Length: 307
Image 1 (cartoon, rainbow, N blue to C red):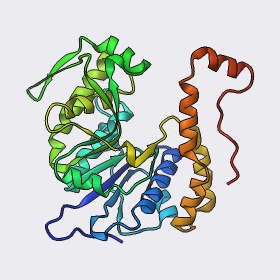
Image 2: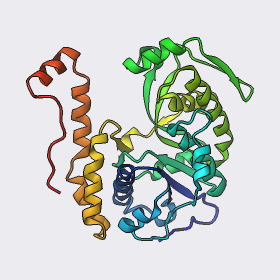
Image 3: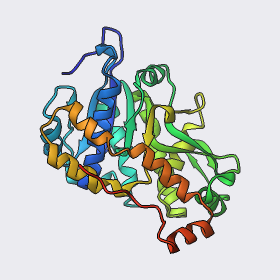
Image 4: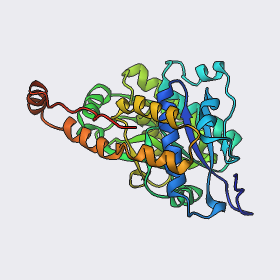
């Protein structure tokens, strides 16, 4: 059921974007179930309303039922397309979603990518957001000295500079990149989102890589306010395991209608967090070691699952 905030207390909102494939919906279902697990002992007045932006609310209701604390805003196809921006990128949908959420659900907004699993109750994050703190998933380091992709982006964009909203923004060796699998801020901060969109479109035009949206958020959030905080200790973000989607689809199709606890237990037996770590460890191996493992039939693969 929906739990209204206490008098004088800001409402918390947990926001998901699940547009398109059944795989993304299945990830969102597991993430939502994991939230209910970690927050089961939190005060009712601090629990967020869950807002799911989707083009298939019926599939969510089939698994979750129709609790009053889950909302599904109705968004037309024309609006979905507009949110992809002038560069027509699916990664920009979250900016439009957050603008809509800030206008229709004022309070403390916490956006999650669907491929996330809650490990701790996020109530402290909402408390920080109410005080003006902004959150992203994790600090991936300075572009110039980060991972291989970050360094490649820096080499292509080190001369990039623009002026947005009266602010000079430029790529520097010290420019830090945060992962945008989590985005948390007060709805009053939504005035920044058109600037994030404008910068993201310019970055995509300059260098067409998927991470331009998160670079735009990172750069704009760094301009004012206190430093962005990381939410990484609260959740697992298994962005590297798209191969898990068919498994999750099958699980939720087979067991739809079972209790939240039973569904969560079944999904947890997949050990996604451990697989996320092991795949990352394999990906970090030197190329020659990965080549040897592939040649000898020991490349990293998902295990088989007994659902």
